[in-house]
Amino acid sequence: MCLLRLGICLGILTVPLGAQAPQPASQPARPTFEVASIKPNKSGSPRGGADAAPNGRVFVSNTALYDMIRNGFELQPYEMVSGDQLPAWVRSEKWDITAQGPPITDQASQRRLRVMLQNLLIDRFKLVTRREMRDIPVYALVFARGDRKLGPQIQTSTLDCAALVAAASAAAAPGTVKVCGRDSGPGFITARGVPLADFLRTLSLFAERVVIDGTGLTDRFDLTLKWTPNQEPGNVGALTDGTSFFTAIQEQLGLRLEPRQAPMNVFVIESAERPAEE
Image 1 (cartoon, rainbow, N blue to C red):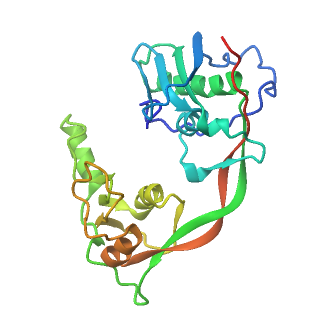
Image 2: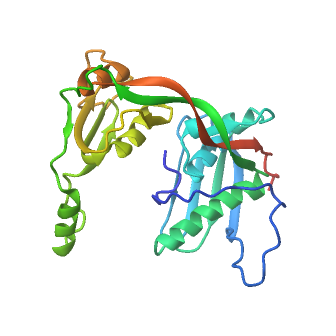
């Protein structure tokens, strides 16, 4: 679920409510919504979602606070750590939110709207978080073979993506270059002309852990990876022979995911409170 279809990664850190230093007069006001309504959702429905309209109105329905934090701060579950005292309702209880912000006119207004959402969680749910370095389980992408030979579904790319993008821009046709980049879905990842670091970010989503580079490869690559996902409607293009994600990486790419521990900057949710009844 995408909480706000903004596509902006802010990297904002939160601090306990009331812990902010007084803002100098020359500093802009702390971004907050003009009006915001928060109500518990007791429907029991498995369906939830959220979106932001061009007029700046934000709608969140049937969503747990944990998921609002994850999406509002643009985090993956493997980047998040819960404090020892975090109550269970943060994950289990669902909420509806309606809030009014300024119209979305450009990227700056998009970023401001996301900061408003973060501040709403801080103010109304008394959300307290921090960032810290911790040793956490990760995977290292390493060669599966001693001779460092890659598999049949990956090869060094011959595409000059920068030149293709420049040509498209010169022709005033942005978005027409489809040969470079990544695509993924249930049971597949494809990449054309991408550095390994970009592929690792996509791998992390499916591995549900941070994946780091253990190969030392610096080229750009074309690759296709297919495996059998959890069987759900719409998994078109995935393998159906039972090939696992980990097996596919080894057989198709000549690589493997090796479990390790590594220091990572994680997002710690320390505490939260239910919002006051309206």
